[in-house]
Amino acid sequence: AFGMGVGASEEIYKIIKYLLDNYTHTLILDADALNTIAKFGVDILKNKKCSVVLTPHVAEFSRLIGLDKEEVITNPIKLAKDFANKYGIVVVLKSATTIITDGNNTIINVKGTSGMAKGGSGDVLSGIIAGLVARCDDTIFACASACYVFGYAGELAKSIQNEYTMTPSDIIASLPNAINDILSN
Image 1: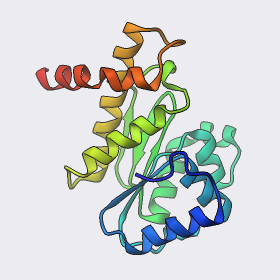
Image 2 (image 1 turned 90 degrees about the vertical axis):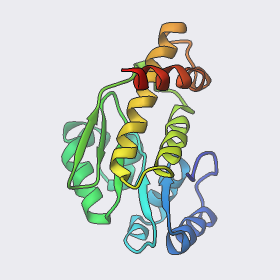
Image 3 (image 1 turned 180 degrees about the vertical axis):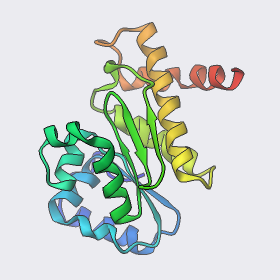
Image 4 (image 1 turned 45 degrees about the vertical axis):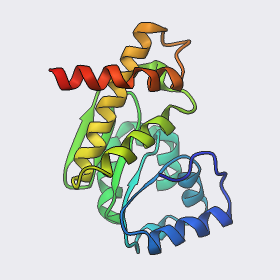
């Protein structure tokens, strides 16, 4: 996973290009990596040696595709599918309902809470995705599973705190219980 807290610059763009040209496993790009690609050129995603997962929220995705946030909110599934198809990637479009698509298959995740819409929560999700894609050959399934576990942990964190005071650390602390609950059902 790459992009969390690195800043958006030409140097970061060069690092992303290097990873796309040389890395041969699954690369999750989030946060500043997405902002860098939006600023310096999305077509960098066309030629790559690795599988790629992008994890934008609506504002990041609107910058990537060059449309207003309102347009993304109006038609998120089609736009995410089209983008995933165009670049041969998996898109995890984060919002109240998360859309996970590789352009052919689309999975909708409704697990979670509005208290997760805070800086750092997406970093937690990217970490969970990274862990699951490392263990699973089915990237879209791994991403959907990660979103479900993340959302479930967020709901548990909200039950301990509340949607206003919960933090990404609370989500992390709730992960073991979320996973145990999911596995026991």
